[in-house]
Image 1 (cartoon, rainbow, N blue to C red):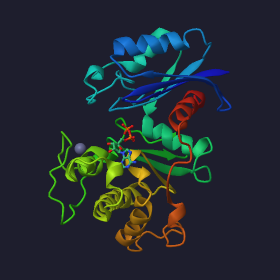
Image 2: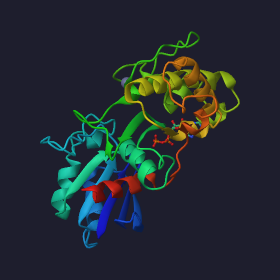
Image 3: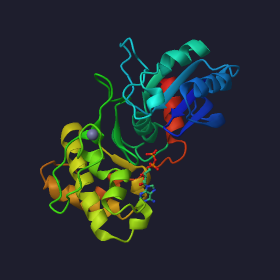
Length: 291
Ligand code: ADP
Ligand code: ZN
């Protein structure tokens, strides 16, 4: 059976035809432009490929509630050309196949658990990206986390670091987690240098880990995932991992009892992604297959 998969990102769309064994048979990458340009290109790529269903993991906010009238419709996205664009409906109409939509981070979490990533040995995991924004997706026992729509774990409040006076970049909340810890705010706070140019500055990463560890601690309390995977541009600073792990253990202070949450096991609990380039598109393929 042939299935279609799309990883819809803010800068590019990855289009793939795959099968129900998780193999990618054909792939093409196109830039994210105005939907009137991008969507016809997507439709013409899939049109004669004989796909039976399509899965899409996308940037958001996007309506992922299947019972909603606006399922698959983009919402208040910073990509202004796409605000309120009915992406799911346009693809369904253009291709005449069922279309399943989820967030990029939800499908990445599912991919890491299902298609040979760093969570194949557990039934629950959380995937967090720390890049231009901060978002997290959760995979629990065969399903990704959905409710009203998707969660917005990047926008929680965290306690301010005593040495931090930076006001934050989130247009909605100022100093929410994304507003003070995503890539762009890091760069602005520390004098306009690029993230990789700050690599040697310990203070930068101590503060970053202080914020990310608070968020992880809250996610552990609320969701109790068996693994936490951290990806995105900022997490290329590998020195963050040991800092975050240590601070998470300190903040939990032994309150949650689990063999994972120990000095010995924390390195296997908070980890980097196992799937790199294909995590998104493979997750979308799994979404199409799952029906
Ligand atoms: P996106 O979130 O747009 O998909 P990325 O995950 O690559 O893309 O995130 C881009 C952000 O990550 C940029 O704001 C940049 O600050 C930061 N970034 C990218 N590479 C590095 C790096 N090597 N070290 C630190 N920060 C980085
Ligand atoms: Zn916010």
